[in-house]
Length: 113
Image (cartoon, rainbow, N blue to C red; front, side, top):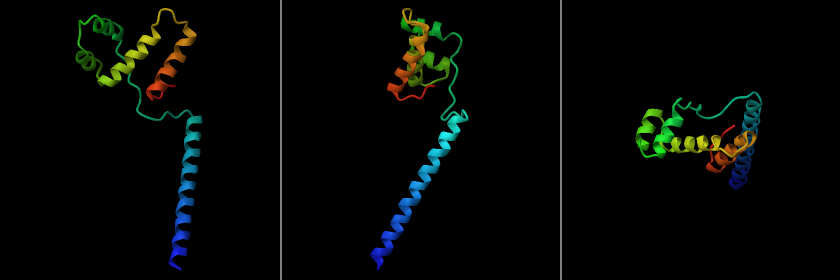
């Protein structure tokens, strides 16, 4: 008798969890259609980021100094650096730049839209 009641309760719990997941997925999909963005808001780069990168590449400035000036983490700096380099490729046609960024961020596991 107890085994049967445990089975019934287990079935109810599993089915309720499936219903919750389904409703949550529907809510997320509806929010995305409305244009809601999930996650932490993206921080803007300083206007002199290109100059800082140039100095960093020439070893005139340390990574710690750039991170402090830009008020970002070291990991965020390297992600922004990669994005900056992709955007400023000399031989890259303009229409392909966004594709490169999406692919590179997808491989890093960073959501960019």
